[in-house]
Amino acid sequence: MPYDDEDGPNGSVVLSDSRTAGSHAPMGSATGGIVAEVRGPLGNALKGQVQLRHDVAETALRGLLAPRKTLPPSLFYDEEGCRLFYEITKLPEYYLTRTEFRLLETIAPAVAELLPAGATLVEYGASDETKAEMLLARKASARAPMRGSFDALFGNTRDEAVFQTYIPIDVAEPALRAMRERLAVHRPELSVVPVTADFMRPVELPKRESETAIMGFFPGSTIGNLEPGPAVDFLGRVRSTLGNGAKFLLGFDTCRDPARLIRAYDDPQGVTAQFNRNLLVRLNREADATFDPETFAHRAIWNATESRVEMHLVSRVGRTVMVAGRGVQFARDESIHTENSYKYTPERMRTMITAAGWTVSKTWSDSNGLFALWLLD
Ligand code: AVI
Image (cartoon, rainbow, N blue to C red):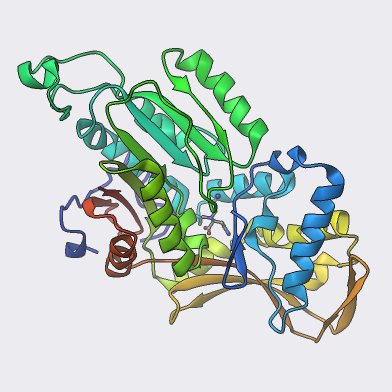
């Protein structure tokens, strides 16, 4: 079946909804040489330009002077990188965003059923509210288990939103501010309390007056851009931040079909190639580098052993490139490893989740087994 025909706009998403996950199958910390961090379009503008240039140059040199050259994916997300990533999410070949979106649309009522009115939603890496909207729009059901409440006892149905508070966490303060302004218009009853923070470090949540429940949300398969060890650490940190009794809705990519993956990460339009090369454009601008981006080939590789798509920039010629006053030697065909995007089997994801102290409570996936949304307790 062609990739762009399935799950068509009006097509149904056949869900596999199971309590036993095994039954089916967009930071700043080092993740094994690859740094995973999603920065919004304007987030870096918060830092002083001098500090910013220094950070970028230092980070880039650390990776480029290593025996196997790497650049952290955090560097993708300057303003142009964010724009290109947005273009990627609209490509027919990039199945992740639309598959997750449809899945989320379908499962949102079931998720809402499990929460009482007056809950808090905490989104990690929230550069916009599009996905959270699916959850924020839900009204509370009387069946939601709010212990001891009058409604739970007497079964009243209320016209109250499930979530009374939304805490989007991102490094991009302007994006968070814009989101709060939009939501103030569309959802005036919702309390929006953005937190500007790098979620790869411990995050302190703002004090809340009262809340009936709390749920974390990490969509987009951003977890796939973390190395497995740091991903477990991240899940553990989220658990301690949200506290006992919290829920966590996690979205991750489960596709392991090499042909489909390569199309998604090396699209014929060349948008992903441009996204990848934009790293070098950024280094020329912000780290006084002398890259000729067009002479670096974009490569997407399926690494079956590690179960990840790797992105590389391969130098077509031998040369020396200057970066922040240092010479960086490239042999012909030498690569800079720019991103890992892990694709998880349910078994491996369950192991990671369990290691982080969570329990898998509900699992959903699309009919083609491309993407999963799991609810953790
Ligand atoms: C943000 N992240 C989940 C994307 C991914 O699929 O790993 C980034 C991306 N890289 C290339 N295309 C999209």
